[in-house]
Image 1 (tube, helix red, strand yellow):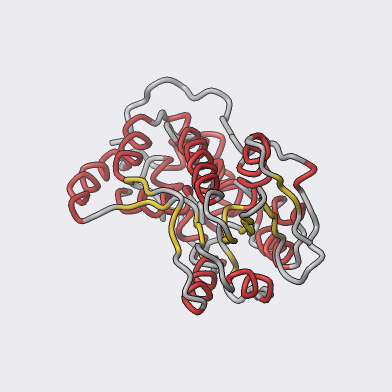
Image 2 (cartoon, helix red, strand yellow; image 1 turned 90 degrees about the vertical axis):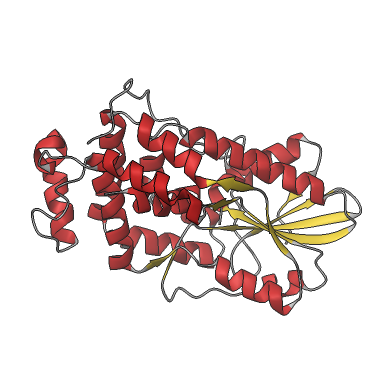
Length: 316
């Protein structure tokens, strides 16, 4: 879903393989979704995940908040979604990233910026104990991530962790799209971004300190183990918004340490709001599926829709 961190990590992994030239040290982490609007943190009374409703008289948008990845095998009740897709004029998804074969030369050129001749343990300083523990958790040898700078190592370790704990970034989006096809409802993203310019900014401009902050976020998530993510998924499936947003966000912390990523999060929220506002001009009802934290964040999607004068409620 709006998983800028998911498709950005995937795209960065294509480039990952001389350390990035240090620019200025990063300021305190800029996290656009750090704070939430408590009034929007609801508990669903209908079966399945929580929904919100946006209305203006002749149009109703049913908004489903989702997690950015799901443990394989995590079930959820799709009955409410199935009913709300019936007769809907659209399903609006978060912004998506696009890259093509023409981006391959630039990706290969960026690989060099994530390589390092220095042993990783020496490069990470005080993070060395966390790194050793994470390698052991993933059952990797001592030299598993040597040859990478901290950012490159973090990207590669994030991919290894997801495989180990069987997190599926394609869910629940894949299920939602399947049900939309069943109901013959058109699916469209709120916006489309070109990936390569974003990657260039992140890789070329990142400082050593940002790379270490990114790596630390990945190490913390690996060392915490999979249970926190699994519990967040279970909470999401039963409509417990507070429990769902309490899940780990260290992968996002990793990306937010990089140049341009906090701005990308804000741009994603603006584009999601614009997509919903445009949909409100069509009579009838539609379904939107956005990241759950981006919905309830202070200054997030639902907060901005309320500020525009639309009525935002829990639909039950």
